[in-house]
Structures are given as structure tokens and as C-alpha cells.
Image (cartoon, rainbow, N blue to C red; front, side, top):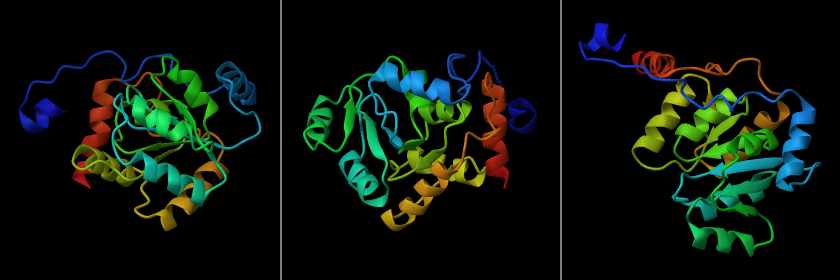
Length: 200
């Protein structure tokens, strides 16, 4: 499609995300994932992701999450040790550093909140976990949030007043039967989604 529309060479590779990312098989998968990670079994969990560097206004995002819903924020801080320490001392957040087992963390979560709409957002969608774009990074974060919103793949609340309803709507739903991105989707399929969004 890229070659036909733009006259540019296009090479596709392996699946868009690792095959380890898949929808949960049911409540037993959720319980098993939470037990492996030492997470509460009976709480709503909102997974906040901000890249390997833990970038963006994560402190405010967490504050907004706490004020907008009953969900406990799980924050992946990556290599940002200062962020992890700062959040951990609040006693209101479960803060992780670098995470190797992201498939389990996604199975454990009720919703993913992202500021970049990057690979983790794709992994969440393939895993059938609702995604919300919030306090997005300038540039690619805003562009990805707009594309995901146009495609109906992720809500994009712009204010904390809009965040609460978006969270409640996401957590009311069970795992959707389709997210628009299927497990095993390759780069060509992802590109088709993006081009379809741009064409709208």
C-alpha cells in the first residue's frame, strides 16, 4: 500500500508485537498474573506507562488518576529511579522500575494509561486491555493519541474532568472481542490502520 500510494519502498517484518502478548484466557489468567506480581486480587488497577525513561508529567497523571477513580495506579517507571522512589513513598501507588514480564502486567491491569501511544499501547490493544491516552507528550504522543482516537482504539480525555468518565467506561467493559489490531499483526497491518486514520 505504501509503494502504491506514495511510490516508496516498503518492507514488512515479523508481527507488530511479540506473540507473548495475547488476550487473557479469562479471570484465571488475571488472578495468576496478579499473584505472580504480588498485586491485589480484588482492586481495580490502572497501568501507567511512560517509556523506558519514565518521561512526561507522570506525577500529575497519577494524582489525576487517584482523584478521578478508585483504581490503584501501577506505574512503570523504567530507568527513572527518582520517579519510582518519589511515587513509592506516597503509599498510593505501586511503582515498578524496569519490567521484563509486560505480558503478565497487562493481564493484571484493567486499563492502560499512556502518554505516547507507542509500542506498549499496541501490546495492550493486542492483549485486549482498554487504552486511554492522557497528558500526551508533544509531537508523537499527541499524533498517536489523535490516530488512536480517530480509529476508535483509545479514548483521549484532555482534562481530569474527562478522565474519570473515560476510566469508568473502560473499566466497565470486559475484554473486547476485537480492538482493530489482532494478535500477530504485522507492520503492514498496523500501517494500514494508520493510513486509514490519516485519510479520514
